[in-house]
Amino acid sequence: MKKLTLLLLLVPILSFGQKIEIDYIINNDNSVSFNYKKNIAGSYLVILEFSNLSNTRAQKKVSKILKNNSGSFLKLKPINEENGISFQYQTMYFKGNINSKVNEDYPYILPFNKGEKITPRDLYSLENRYLNEEIPKGWKSYSFTFNEPKEVKAIRKGIVIEIKDIYTPNYSTEVSYYSEQNSISIEHIDGTVATYKGFDKNTIQLKEGEMVYPQTTLGQLVKYDNRDMYRLYLTLYSYTTKDNISLFRLNSADDYEIAYLTPKFFIRNSLEVLNDNNEYLVDFDEKTQFKEMRKREIKKFKINK
Image (cartoon, rainbow, N blue to C red; front, side, top):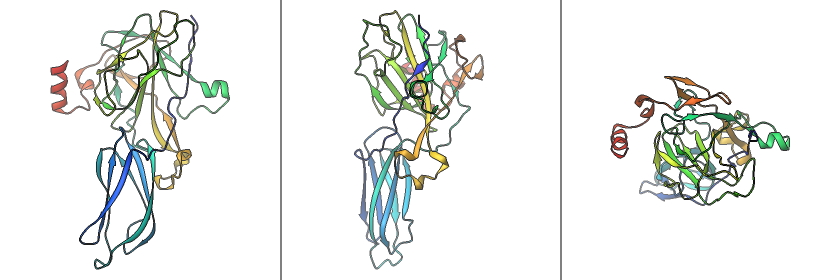
């Protein structure tokens, strides 16, 4: 069997506006309330930039991370309440909770059933290996290979922000890597995102916008090619501005990037970074599993278990 040590860069950084709406109302006191509706899962940075702004002391550029489906964005107050506020504005939208405070010591749970033995492999970046591009910031990605299908579990509580469930592998050949694989991306409370690749078509029983918890079943691995081999790809990352620029200076998707993470997993009652080609036993305790869950979530989780 060929040794697999490669992975394609997972997530393009895109600007989104078509599924986020910003509108405003003029109140009786001549103040102006801006509100938003977000019809897409996950966090988005919205920058609202004013021009021809008068009769208010508001800043000309305002940024906000939108997490909820709707809410208040901004309120402009007039200097002279007898007159209205004059303004024009434009908006920019960026995917992700950019420059969020990442918990680098969060205790992740391995993405399989308790008691399973797993052997992670470190992957290299295709862009760096074959296109001579720079290694992506903080690059780290894993694969887990088995000789039978396995259920994949969530490693942390989060919101499902993207599902791809349309691909069927070509079983007639032996391949090193498929770029077109069924996948799930989950955003965590600290803005980090975990992407899981390698699911069998139609085994993902989740929806975008749905909350998952550690050990929630995500789907089942698919046979990889003409070998009896099943493989999960797991990558964690966050979004950061390039060169430490402020959010106010973002003008396009070229101004920010993906920063990959090296997660720490619960291993033998301690936190460990996974070593390449070492064998591990999937294990966890309730304190770790329920760490970010509310009491009612824990109760519901136990009932549905």
